Length: 245
Image (cartoon, rainbow, N blue to C red; front, side):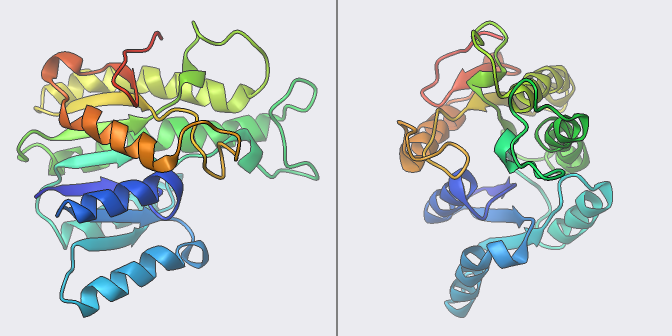
């Protein structure tokens, strides 16, 4: 049994991770940003507590806000003493940005600086700040791990077309920041990697995506279970294949 923290746990990939780790018998700290959009997660917590099971711990977290990260840390510290795994899953796509009258800022001619900064703040900066805050809880855990959910779209070598400026750049930045931080984490005994979940059928990936949420998460869990110190700082896909930067 492990203590696992998953950001953005109320839907999509985060929700699937949450359910599968709970089923495996782990304790899951499941963060969410919007109470109204997290009723399924909160209802699951209520049902589990009614059954005498407190393995699910939902915690409010606005990943862009350092005060919220600190408050999340304080709350988590009340429930567990050490953290075995942190999965930085919370993220947003270009389509999620809503600035001004237009909701889509992913193509040349429609780019807006505030929209790009917003995506970078959520996808690139937030995972690093969250990891930095929670790393002390991982130092004394057995075989602790940090997983940043990245994307193949962040690979400079593999990008051969236009579009999705903000999202792609944010994942490239996450890869660099995660790569640098991996050296600091390894000095604490923590293995950290960047994982591409595949093109997944989620609200972000869309209905045409070829990979189901279940297949993606099951694959990533196998990769995570098999992580070794030699893989620290690497960039892999959900099937365990190393990806080019």
